[in-house]
Image 1 (spheres, chains in turn red, orange):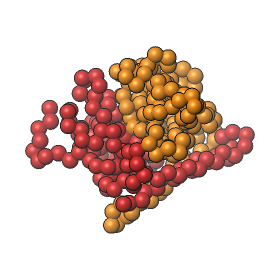
Image 2 (cartoon, helix red, strand yellow):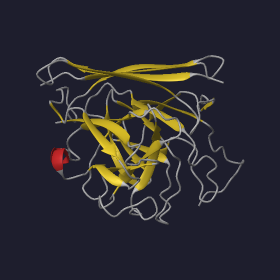
Image 3 (tube, chains in turn cyan, yellow):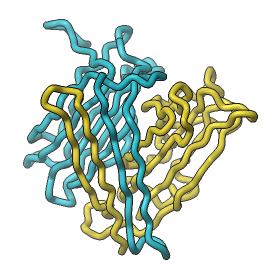
Length: 155
Length: 156
């Protein structure tokens, strides 16, 4: 069993009247259990040169999403050093937010199917704001990734 | 202008080679090197039933100042200790705050992920008016045994 811990410290000396310091740590477990997550996609590093949205992980296929409801944790980082360059994060067809240069996110992911019959499954998409090239890193730590059969046709 | 930093550290022996993340970000205004200067402060909310409700509503409250052209970050933590009880976090045109239940929640809301006891998340928030609500639904909250969440929004 693997042990994965995630710690966050948010701090500011001048946001509010007194210094702000928030620290939290958790251990990443399988859904509803105290057994550690044991699978990962590994850390991906890519250089994207198009503003087209892409899926970060293998596309979720209607009716066969094996790991829905299981635990997945996702890290995405915009490695751009230009503060004006951002990536739009979309999940299930809904725009979540923008990661500007240097920003990251850390969140759970349920790999849900669409409930709207609009084919907007829980795929996590990013769309760079510029096509001149942006660096990104991402990883998923989970109970399993839906790796597709070879040559699977996805409509 | 304030300086807010968020330092993430992930350590794991999940592979033979290990996996580590050490990343600090400064929360800046959209497209700027100037820091965000507003916050809700750390809020705590108690749930005594399993209704799906809005935790944060786009276009309302603090979200009035959160638009597509402005940056915002949201921190949310399940401060319960149970390894089996969780909050289902969602995004979308969410519940009505009073009528949505685990079985009839607005179908346009979309499940993002689950926060079990002690779990936390930090995400950007676009707060698009019709689909940008952040929804929450406890799995096992009762009056006798409520569930609690803490959250904080940083914005410009």
